[in-house]
Length: 407
Image 1 (cartoon, rainbow, N blue to C red):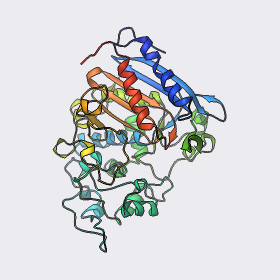
Image 2 (cartoon, rainbow, N blue to C red; image 1 turned 120 degrees about the horizontal axis):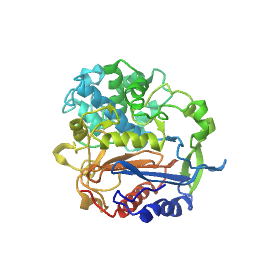
Image 3 (tube, rainbow, N blue to C red; image 1 turned 90 degrees about the vertical axis):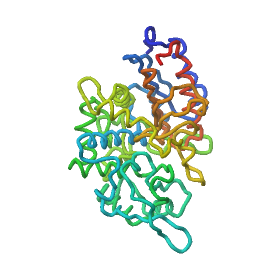
Image 4 (tube, helix red, strand yellow; image 1 turned 45 degrees about the vertical axis):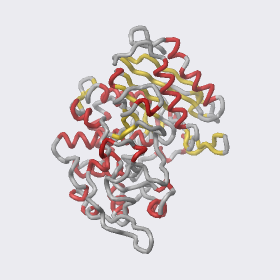
């Protein structure tokens, strides 16, 4: 579907995007399928799809397919916490230990014979949202702290006691660095999700549903897929030895039942259409239709670079290397989203102020306020070595379809 006559796009150039991605990634077996939505100037100007949501069953990609969005959950959790910030229940400069006492005075891993040392300063709420908290993920496979996360299975969906139990686990572990010193992708957004629970008196799922999903008409987004929707749920694949193997069969998925731990860092599933409504809310300054989730000033705060000294992510990453969702320079980090701060450094078309993020199963979105545009891309494959390249190609093709800049 293309409606590109009045919105600064070439219809023929838009129409070539998904076929180009399909030839390069679907036909070669790098991804099972692709779905692309482009919104600009108040209209859905492009919707296209190719490939499958289930290869073995021959199920083609469909507009209402449900995907594991993994870390695209993080911006939603960040919005939830910012909603409570607007209500005066929390501030970005508040120490996390004020709300979670066990986080007060957490030590930093010192190496050698001593596992802890004193932190330079307390972990602040802003550190959770911009990933400067000193927390980590077990999958980084870099340090003894990462190994401890793996040993305790930190953040597992079947964790008895949910987010509260996860916080108790984290209280027993050292930080990787003193808060504010580095940018390290981590479980920090799960901690932010726990703060949402504490401050609202609701489970994270209930807060999402009542305060975000229902107001935005995101009816297919949640922490699990109900039985009547499983036929729309995409199977998730793993890139392995140059081929795709089933990682999570949609018909026998762990996402078919409610999780014990509702992960604000990566637990949601949803459709491209639902996520586009979330993007449109941000693009429109916190409001969509009659639902005002945030003020325009809060959205502006969320989507500016908050890294200390205005630095870029690549200038704050640990020296030992890091998994990340962007893969290029010129990008800072806001409150739950990456932010383009130096366009020439990215070596990509786009705009300063564009914000974005992606998920582990190769999903992605980006929003360009200067061009009044939001883009959502869905597929379902973990461990794809082409993931960063795919996202770069997506941006290049979308911006290459423009005939008029609104900036």
